[in-house]
Every structure is written in C-alpha cells, then in structure tokens.
Length: 129
Image (cartoon, rainbow, N blue to C red):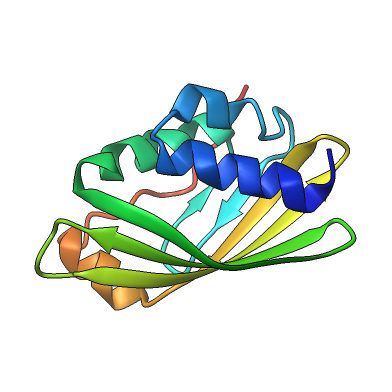
C-alpha cells in the first residue's frame, strides 16, 4: 500500500473509532507521536488517548491529504461536541516506512487542549517494553 493510502486508511479507522484496526497500521517498535503538548512512545499509549477523546468527537473531516515519498501530510478539521473548544484544525505529518506508520507529528492550538484537560496532560512513557 502506498504511504498516502495507508495514512488515509488510518484516518478513516480513527474517524470510525475502530482503534484496534487503526493500531495495526502503526509500527510496533520505534513508534513516536509528537504534539505541541504531549508525546507518546508507543502506539498503545497514543491510541488510549485517542479512545479517551472519542466521546467528544463529532466528526473528523479530511481537508487535504498529500504525500512526498514516505512523508504524508494531512489537514483535518476535528469537530467536537465539547462547546468550550468547538472545532480544532489539525496539521499532521506522518512518516511511513514499509507498511507501517512510524511517526506522527501533530500541529494544533495547544492552549485549547490544555484548557480542556485542565492542565492534566499525558507524559511520554515508553510502555512498549
């Protein structure tokens, strides 16, 4: 599968809240998620956080998806049921090697998420071992 198709499939699985299926598209070793206010070193930790956010997810709209080799870039609108934050625009940079996503870098307004979580942000802990 081409990197762009792999990422499109991952986003579709997250949108459908099929987290176990989405997990299969992420690298088991050496996975990293980096955002403006959190970092995960295992796919399980990142998806556990996504699962926790599922209750407020109203929609996930792909505005743009493009690729340059193993680098895939996505612009998303994350629409929520949570009035204080409303909708969040996300820019995501995925790095794909082989048939798995190894790195996800997220860019968004960090203050919105910090306010929503009351300053209780997850920290980077490698639980993959």
